[in-house]
Each structure stands twice: as structure tokens, then as C-alpha cells.
Image 1 (cartoon, rainbow, N blue to C red):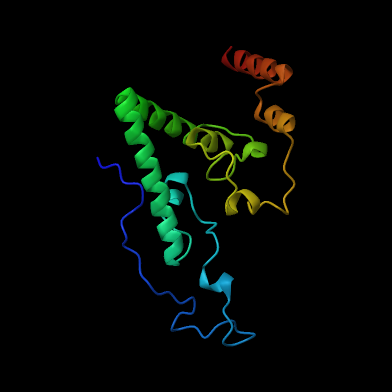
Image 2: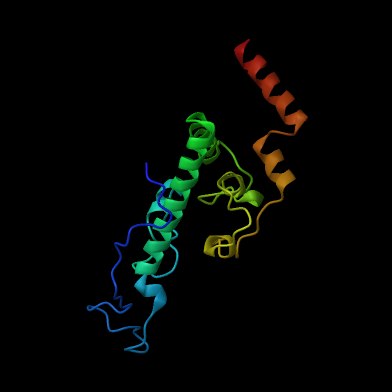
Length: 173
């Protein structure tokens, strides 16, 4: 494994936001329409693994930044492997996998999003602010409080847990 600091230069040197088939916004022809061009973040990313490798737009700078993040992560894991042995990168990978595939995360901590605060902490990106941290897509939706969500899930209400046990016992008799 190489200790590459920057990704290999495989990017294009020119880019145009306007596609050849589109002349721009329908209300103002010739003016670039960012939302229709798909330059913003994608709301259809299902998992954080796919979100980390697929750029949100066709701009070469964004794909270069994605490659930069992947190269920096590979450099960090290679340094950990050389310092602490192969167990450290494997352990960190397992922790990330457990965090990504966790059963339940509260909405207050980014539960419905593709990545949450737990994954940010494990990746060392908890102090970074990116587009998805500000514009989550739930600005118009009222988020339930943490305690309401835990009670609704049935994890903290002892009366509800007792009721489910009695229902189970009475249904089996």
C-alpha cells in the first residue's frame, strides 16, 4: 500500500454547467438553473457507503474532493496499520460498520439521515461542517424530542413493557 498524500490527477480540465440539450431555466433561457442541473446534494443517497464514493454533481472539483477524502482515509489507515498492526484498522472498520448498520438512532442525533453524529465522531469529522449538516431536508418537519422518541419506541416506559409481558402470558394460556 502506498503512502500517497494526494490522489492521482485523473480529473478533467474544463467543465460547463450548461448541458448541450438544455438552454437553461425555462423562465429565463440562457441562465443556469442549479437545481435542474443536479449540482446540489442528492437526496436519494440510501447509505453512507454509497454517499461517500459517489459525487453529488458532475463538477470535477467535487469528484477530486471525494478522491481526496478517500486518499486521506487510506493514508490514515495505513499509518495505523504500520504503527499498531493490522488489528487497529480492522477494529475501526468494524466499529464504523456497526455504527452504520445500527438498529435505531434518535432523530435528534441524525437518525433518519445517511450518516449520524456517531459515524462523524468515529471518522474524526465531528468538527467539520458540510452541506448535509446544514440542509438536512427536514427543516419543515417537527422533530420529536429524544425522550418522546424513546418512549414511543418502547425502551423507557416500564408500564408499556409490563403490558406487553402480560399480553404475551395471557395469549399463550
